[in-house]
Length: 95
Image (cartoon, rainbow, N blue to C red; front, top):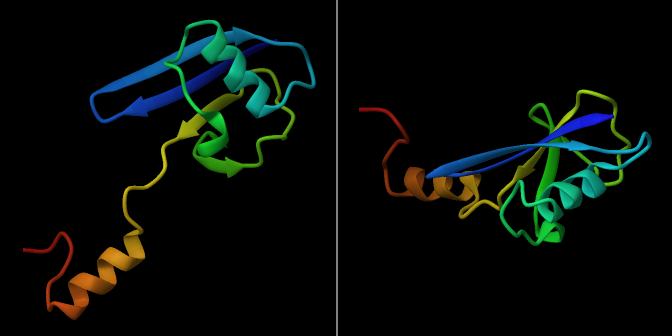
């Protein structure tokens, strides 16, 4: 069955199609995409996975047509940034 695996950096995006066996997990499909050279080398154990913008467990079995998305770790916790700005009397995104 055909699965897509997506990964993005601010300056570049990758979308790899991989052919996998039924019952494959999201993590196995992501590893297959990296091994096939469709994605850059990644430490997949430090990334969160999702399907069509919904976070999933890495061991979730996939269905034909799923797009596994590999999410990068956040550089900063958005709640903490908001709290720090509020404490400084500033707002996010408002002028």
